[in-house]
Image (tube, rainbow, N blue to C red):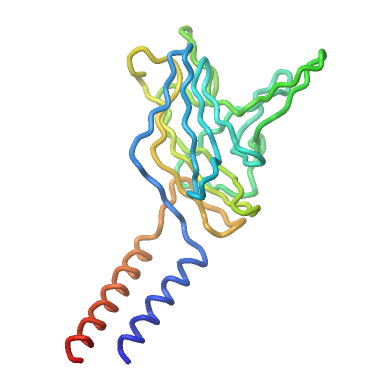
Amino acid sequence: MNWIVALTCCVTVLNATAQGTVVYHNEGDIPVYSDGATGAGRELDLDGNGTVDYTLIAAFGFWVVPAGANQVVGVPEGGFDLGSYVWPLSPQESVSSVVLAPLQWTGTETYVSPGGSVSLIYPSFHLRTTTGTAGPWRDGVDAYIGVRFLIDDETHYGWINLDIPDVYPENTLNGGVIKDWAYNTVPGEMIFAGQVPEPSTWVLLIAGGSLLWWRCRKRMCHA
C-alpha cells in the first residue's frame, strides 16, 4: 500500500500546483531589430495554445500589437490623446486589474480621420531616430511589460521581460531583445513582474515522483 500513499502525495502536489501556478517560459534571447526601413517582428504565444497573444514589431519605431482584447500596462502619450507608451515595470511590481494613474491598461486603438480613413494605433516602446529616442523605453532599459490576456475567454495576468540595449547591433536602429515571460494560470489572479515558479513546488514534485518510482520498483522487485 506504500506505493498508493506515494501516488496520493504526488497527485496532491500536482493538484495544489494546478490550482495556481506561475508558468515560466524561456527559450533564450529573441532579438527583434530593424534598420528603420526594413521591419522586423516576433509573435508570442504566451500560453502555448497555438494562438498569438502579442506581436512585437520594430520598424521606424518599436511597438507591441496586442491580439484582440489583450492589453498591456501603459501611459497615454498625451498631445491629441492618441496612442500610448508601454510602461517599463521594475522587478516585483504587481501586475493585476489595479494600476495607479497615470498608468492604465491599454490595447489597440482605432483612429478615424476627418476624411473617414481608419487606422490602428498600437502601444509603443519608443521612437528612436538618429537624433535621439522618445518614449520611456530608452536605450539601456531592461524591464518588464505587464500583460493582460485571454485564455479561453478568461483574463490572465503575466509579464514579458524586454531588454533595450545601450549599444545597438550594427546597422540596426530600433528594437530590443525578448528575454523571457511568465503568467499566472489562475484567471484574474495577480503576478509580480519577474515572478517565476516557486522552487519548493519543483522540489516537491521531484521528490514525490522519485518516491513513487522507488516504491513501484521495490514492489516489482519483490513480486
